[in-house]
Length: 150
Image (tube, rainbow, N blue to C red; front, side, top):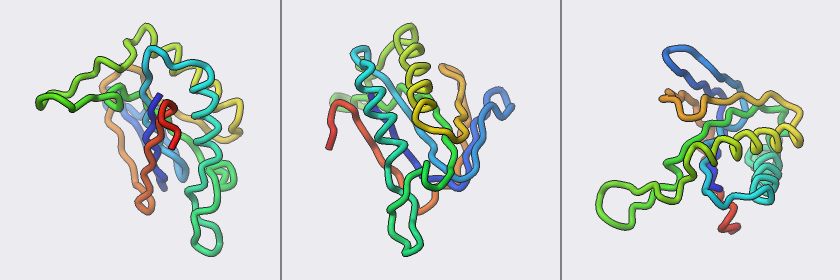
């Protein structure tokens, strides 16, 4: 499971020219899944994201989490996070889970986030052509992989 997290002052997602998810200050989370992602991956990633200290404290140090800030979450499925560019110029997505596997994992991930986070959680539409808008604060962008816990 891979996630790219961006600290934002606002973010939204549109499908067919309609806003389907929108947040103010918080985290925009792009997430992609592999066939072998398990409950442990979802639990670990959810806890990591909710507790990630990427918001500034009163001294300007990134020392506060989205929960501390009473921020919001926007979660967007993105299979391209598993792109392999090792060979050639066309990315391969062989490692990305197909929708029949990825959709239940995505739903379980949202459930895990909601079990740890009392704030607003918005989402995109799985598999849809989405237009994502954001104002990245900092900028702060963090990549996390549940199979490579650096």
